[in-house]
Amino acid sequence: MKELNVFIRSEHRSKVTDILQKNRAGISFFEVLGTGITPSAAPEVVHSYRTRRTTIIEFVTRLLVMTVVPDSTAKK
Image (tube, rainbow, N blue to C red; front, side, top):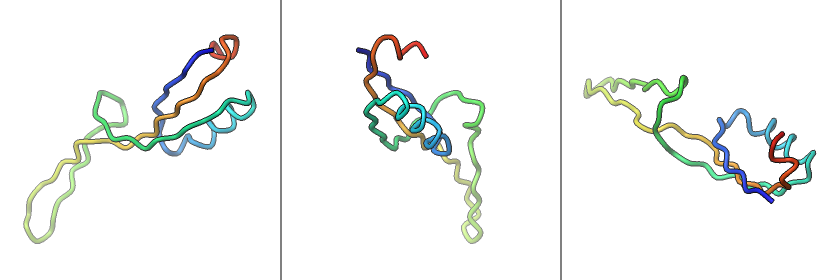
């Protein structure tokens, strides 16, 4: 048995759920915040109208998928 911990975007949740349910694996999802170097993690600049301050969002929201699968299924 192998434990898989995978970070995915929220929009890929249904695809991942379908794949894991086909293999009859138990699934746990957690919403997490983090930083790192990813192609889509460019900082988003938000300007406030009245204060004219610039705010940079530091963390990106992802889903942490945790599951336990048999060794033969883990390689797929």
